[in-house]
Length: 88
Image 1 (tube, one colour):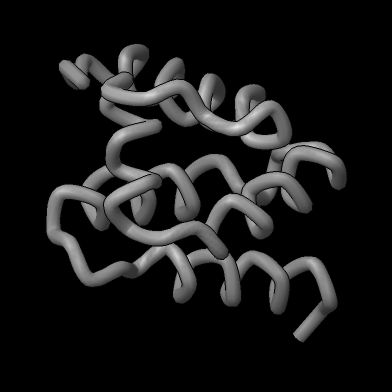
Image 2 (image 1 turned 30 degrees about the vertical axis):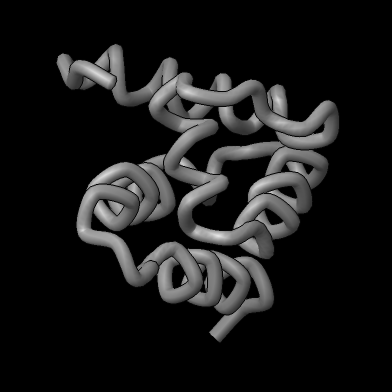
């Protein structure tokens, strides 16, 4: 298994959270997009996953502004979901 594939697998597994609503936002994004993110975006995504579930959900739903470090990746996730026809 290549390093890239292993990193992608870890990201998919870490995207599974305790909240179903969050799982529905993160898992499809990780499965579909993580492998084409830049290294900086992958690092940002991985760092973002260290946040509490409630904080992540607020960021992704637009109920709270993400941290400066997470702004770009949260925007990518929201943009991807909108392109898929999802309402956030």
